[in-house]
Image 1 (cartoon, rainbow, N blue to C red):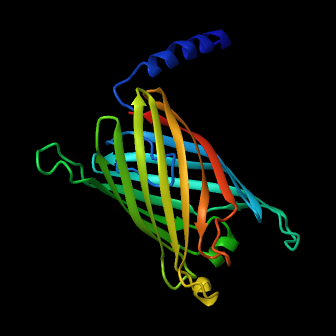
Image 2: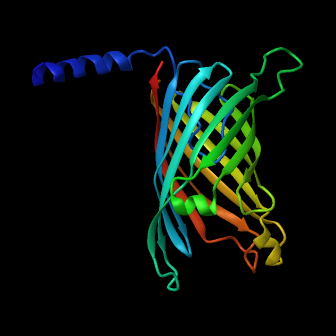
Image 3: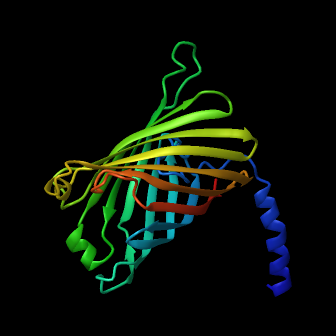
Length: 274
């Protein structure tokens, strides 16, 4: 097949694919929390993004985070997730100032427990899903430090009006060296003022229960983060997003003042196959 013919086929087939609007992308990103939506059977979706975190001690570049979601059933999906972080240390005492740190490969599932109803009297009951992941090490050093990690997260969502809904979740995170799991919770307010445009503001809270915080005399440390952002539905199968946030309280600081930490990110979600 000649080069010109291939170019013509691409130019013809891509618009035809883009006009297939029978399904709409349903991403979990952006934000720290996760929605209750489970992909229908046969749908494959790719969600990816880049992030930048600034702290007094280091700069963190997410390069990038990648999530593949596979609809197995109308009530369950398979998930594969990976993210790597390039760390630029700012402390003079750290000998290796820059390094790339891969996160564990996460394999998990999201299962719909209750899809909601419009029946009078019970409409207020939230949609409910559960998200579970297991993290597998990708390097020998990681296998020594964190052989297996795991997360379980209970997800809730309520539609308040046609343009406003809330989602909230509660979960736990396990690793090999902590005597107790860490706990986290989030609450997000989501607005759709006009078609294709979404806005959100969210509070994400982490309760760190590992032994080091108790040894430091602070008991259970906790972080309170605020993030916000917007999404734009470029096409029924493609959504763009931009977000940012900051750490407004960190109990492990001696003066209990807000931590010097902020973060920004951008990304895209793409429905690949139906």
